[in-house]
Image (cartoon, rainbow, N blue to C red; front, side, top):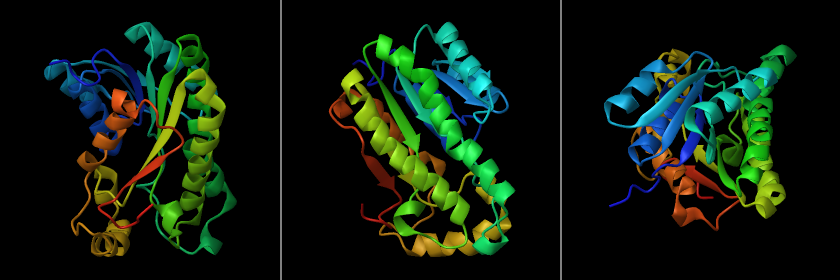
Length: 253
């Protein structure tokens, strides 16, 4: 039986840990050739994929630096011989401390948007010409459930993800004629390695997030990749501009 994503070539940003690592592992398990990118080369993720018999390469890149994004995509094309999909997962979240918006200075807003918004835009700009020349492709943006809920004390983060939500919809319109499908996956509060190292987030968000879910348990990185793999698959060939909320039924979109 042919693997669902056999020989698809996919670039995953933020692949060193957490949700990005889980996505890279799952896409590879479904047959994709994966380029894992991160601000530090995600060598461990790549080793795990190769140990399981998959194909993967590691690329170091800071998505907030456009010149590094261009080099990242060029490296992906050179190493994998093509590019069928992009997963925009890199972002700032786990290091954030919830607090009133009056206490969040403009510099922190800028840094968050440089990565969470402009980084996504730069990656899309870098892959679009190749996907157009290749007859199409798939882009999946990792968003967040927070813009749908409007949670307090994380205004800069919620705003950044709201921007990516809007970007996903507009890009779907713009790139649809080129057969490039753009969708989003919006996870709930996830117990990634970074979050587990942030005691303030755990104290303020873990219990309330769990209790709000229809499936009342903690969410882990492995809960997200199935939705991403679906958007990359043949079964999603006529779906674009959509965002699938993956949060155990906390928000019904």
